[in-house]
Image (cartoon, rainbow, N blue to C red):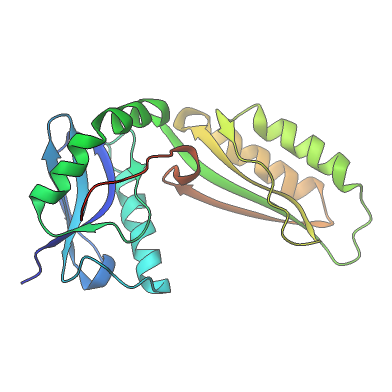
Length: 208
């Protein structure tokens, strides 16, 4: 029987479970509580799961399902691979990082992460700086925070993640749609909603 706790993220105290195609073959997701926090977990056979494409997608999909719940307004995501031998070890982590988790949950409450990439077509005739300034300023107005560009390809014009309030999501969607329509020489890659990986920074230093 699987006995290790694989952790997807942390939410405010909650009690739920649901069936899912989860990490390492797990098929059930549920919560483990410590005071005002709940860890979202599955039971798996190891404390060192192998990172495969399938399990990476499963990790993100579980977090997406958590975010879509009506009784969850914020989740602090854990990076892939955080697993603990039992509830006691997990609760030790929740206790030691409780203040940081609580602060992060407050900061991202009611927000999701959205990703936008603008890729120039091969023969695009445009000023990339002007495009980046135009689109960047329009999206920034609708976001609480954003990441800096990581232009790892010559064709990338803009590559940012945005922390967007759920109430502003429709306006953000519409702005991205407008950009897609206005710029014929660009391919717009729009992803999310994701858990806010790029907007929380909690380092876990407890034994697993």
